[in-house]
Image (cartoon, rainbow over all chains, first blue to last red):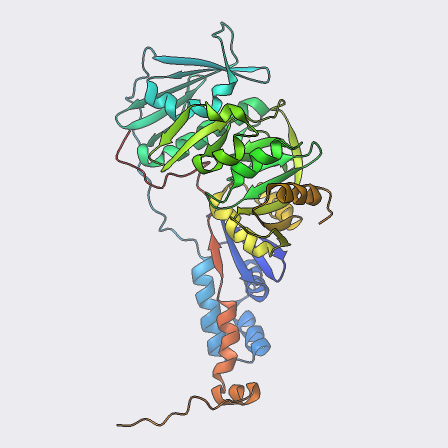
Length: 378
Length: 56
């Protein structure tokens, strides 16, 4: 049998198995994972069938059926992957001039970003408006963004990065952000462990991730916490490096939805007059709040994952949750490096985490609870 | 035709195992074959649109 690269990590009473060829994570019973391990060691199906038949006291043919089926489903490479449409970009000419050219400064790094029209700008600029500086002669990086033939194109320092249809505009935005963090933190894509769809705060020593479905209050909680002594590291796009598994700062603004304004305007009066953006595609109206972080080079270790939920009139509840449940919610929303070494680092990091579910309606109680989680004093 | 099934009759776990006989063993096999496949995003992404719209 062709050998397939897999990684195994026992978490609670399951084994998480990672498959290199698909970058898939599969949550298995420990015995099932042991069967896969034996298959990959080259142990014959017959020997494994005998052992399983004895262990479970089932007839040999039932054990054999089971193992052959498992082998077929999980172990044999699946070649039916959907073929992606290859965009033929060779004949695309970059525009000779851009109608919107904006300069942004992130720490000391200056970006010149050229948008062909307002449309392109509207997909990126609002989240970075607080970083705008006057035009300068010398800049460190140049990004070009233009729509041609219903595809949006991204070039970084004259190199073609990619093009996306309107269906995949969130991948364009993700790639744009990825290019930004590579430039700010001087790390190539393979040096990142992953990017989480979360909010990240820090107490100056370590960081904490907030997760939860859209509308659960991740960003609002983040805004409340940054007004109470914590620092916003990243909102919506949270990168983690491979080398030290630390959460890195991302300088985009915090997006605040309409229904949070009442809570936040007393703390952030500027929100009352800030521009409102109506994203019909996302079905939401948002205003942007500047992160209080002043050092966008910041990166800190992270030991806690918190599934946060604001629920009107809810009594405060904060409890540890099963890591397997947390894993099932985290993975489909994250980009995770397909490199084997990085997948191992990710599994080890995940294994060391504490996972919580925090439901609240009283802001002060939520802030106090987060503070206690940071102090390991829950 | 009239069916006379008394659903209220309760049996002990031991009796239940005896009743299903050999099939009980296969429940363990079924449990081993139950797993969840999780796929991370194929690329870095911003919050995904709920309605992708009709074009740029």
